[in-house]
View 1 (cartoon, one colour):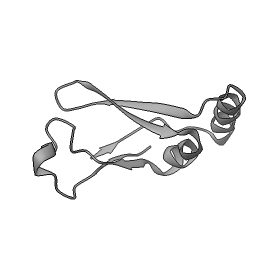
View 2: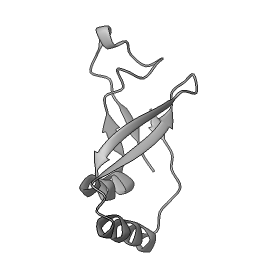
View 3: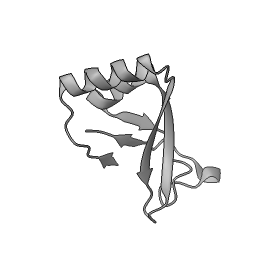
View 4: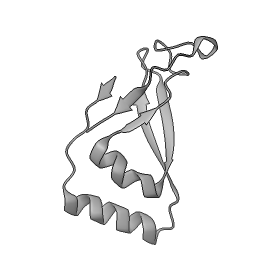
Length: 82
């Protein structure tokens, strides 16, 4: 699954990263909704945010309703991409 995000300018991304580092932020919560509309959260370390913005983020979707049951996990994964 691909989730489209708004394009982020290099200048805006740089300002966000600098502000987060100055504030001592170590982790960022990324949120999305499953197929039933329930909010889900993926937490990543701040140093991974730059790459996630540029290239998307892969994560295990086994606990996302409608994608795969936890007890029937298969290699399928979801992606967040811009």
